[in-house]
Image (tube, rainbow, N blue to C red; front, side):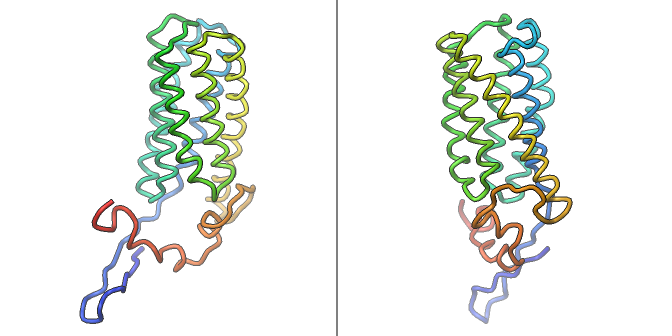
Length: 228
């Protein structure tokens, strides 16, 4: 797919930017998130023994982390910094949680991990705020931030109540993630909105807008212009 940029004097040849359409990586990233948050919630809520935490950590490292890393890379290639940044932070945070859990005794808390989780929660506010044109994906990001923040406080404080709250928020996050993944997957396969995602503004134009509206600003996007 080629976009021709013609904001040049008539004596100069037009600039052509070649676009490579790709599928949305967000369903993959959200499904991976649903697996991780559900698995750790079962440990935090003591639905399964804390001795199973190492198995959960291994599964998240093997499944969620690489899947969300792929989603982050594909997000950058799709020129969607919100999706790419959000998935990148999620991937790195789950990797940190998985490794810390794997190398600690079952049920142990870590103030260091708590600090990391609080920092990750703060970082997720950036893509969450920027995702205002898609309400459901933004809700997933903000709920992820809340989940990490509560878990971070629980790791620092050591209180059982904080960990329980984090677990229940993790369950809510799993439901939101599954809905967002299903809505995006149906939207991609049907080329129209099937389940509402709360698209507005630029988010709605991304699905319902005409092709010229989609590419009119390509020439000034990062990766095309001379400097980021």
